[in-house]
Length: 530
Image (cartoon, rainbow, N blue to C red; front, side, top):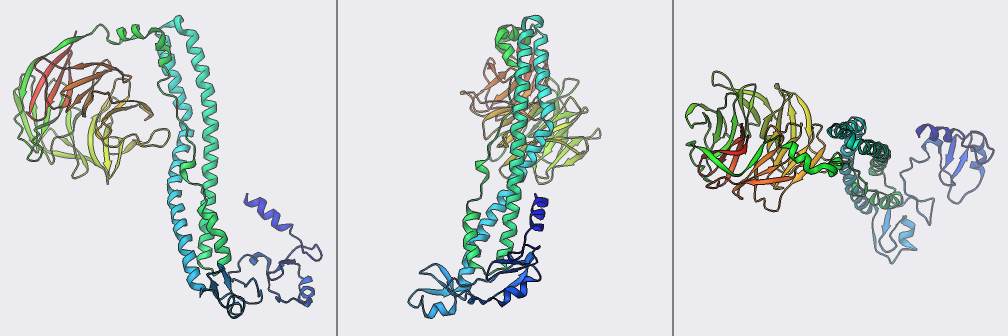
C-alpha cells in the first residue's frame, strides 16, 4: 500500500509544464517545477503566493481567512461557526458573537482527544480479538481434525451400520472448515485494516494537537466520531457436539454401553458417616469445604480452619497438618495433597515431612479450584476483579494453556470455582455466578453448559471412571449426575437426605463421598451397583 502511494507521488507533474514537481504554492494550489517557480511568482495574485517544498505542502498548520486569504485567522465567529481574521471582526462579523481562536482550538482538541482516547481503547480490544482470531486460524486444522477423529471413533463403534453417515459428516465438516477458514481470514484482514485506520487517525490527532488549523479540525471531528467500533464486527463459532449426529441412530444403545454393565441405584444408600470435627466459620457458620482421595483410599479434608485432616473410610483420623489458608480447594498430585491459597495467590503442597511447599504463584490472579490431570499437569481456576479463567500449569508453575474465551471471544466463566478433568480429557468447571457447570475439551473449546431448572446452587464437581459428571447442589440438597456430554441422567438423594452438600470425591466401587458444609459431616454414598 505504501509502495503504491510512493509511486503515485513520483509521477506528479508541474501544472505549468508537465515536468516533475518540486514545489507547491499553498495560496494558489499549484504544483511547480524548479524553473516555473519564478514564472509563477510574477503572476499577480490578491492573496499573494506561499511557495513551499512539495513534500511539505500538507504541513501548513496556519488557518487562513476565507474572506481575506492573505490574512491569518485570529478569532472565531460563534454566530457563523467559522474562523475569521482581524479585518472580518471589524467589518463582516462586526455584530456577531466573537471568541478567541485559541478557545475554539482548545474546545475542538478536547473533542478530538476524547474521541481518539476512545478509539485507542477500542484498539487494544481490537488487537486482542485479532490475536485471538489469528490463533484460532493457526489451530483450526487441529481443531477440525479432533472433531473428525471424534466422529470416526464414534463411528467405529457401530462399524458398517453408520459408515455412510460418518463419510457424510466428514464431508460436512470439510465444507464447514473451508467456509470457516474463509470467514476467519476475511475477518483477520478486516481487523488488520481497522488497526491501520486507527493508527492513521492517531497520527492525524497528534498532528492536529500541534496545529491551529480549525478548519481541518472541524473536518476531522466527524471522521473520527464515525469510525467503526468493535460491536459492528461479525463473529463465527465452531461446530459443537457434532459427533452426536451419529448417536441419533442408536442413542438408547449407547446409553446402555456407557454404563458398562453398572446399574445406578434407585435409592442410593449411606454406608458410612464421618464427623470431621472442623469448627464453624464465624461469618457463614460453614465447617467442611473440600476433599481429595488418596491412592490407598484415604481422604484428605479441608474446612473452616487452617489445617487439613486425613481420614480413612471408617472415620478414623490418621493425620493433621497446618496450612496457610482454609482448606477450600484440594486435590492430589504425585501422591501429595495440594491446596490453593487465595490470600497469597499461590498453589501449595504438603511434603512428606508435613511442611508447606509453594509450588508456584499465580501473579495478580487469586487461585480457587485445583485438580491434577492425566498428563501430569495442574488445572487451576483463577479470578481477578470480574474476570475468571482456567490455567494449565506444569509442576514448576510454567503456564502451558489458558482458557478464558469461547470462539466468539466472549468470556467462558464469570466466577470459576471448582474444577475436574473427565476421562475423555474434558475440563469441567463449576461457575457460582452463572450457577452452571461448564465443559470445554482438552483444547479449551466450549462443549456444553448445564444449569438445570432444579439447580439451586452449583458447588463442587467430580468425575468417575466412565465419565459421569457429578456435582453438588448446595442449596438444592441433592447431587446431580450428568453423562459425559452434559445430559442429566438423574439426581442422587441418599436415604436420610443430604444437607448443604459442598465437597465431593469418587472413591471407587460405586461409591462417592459428599461433605455437608454446615454440619461438617462427610457421608459415603453407594450410588452404583457393580
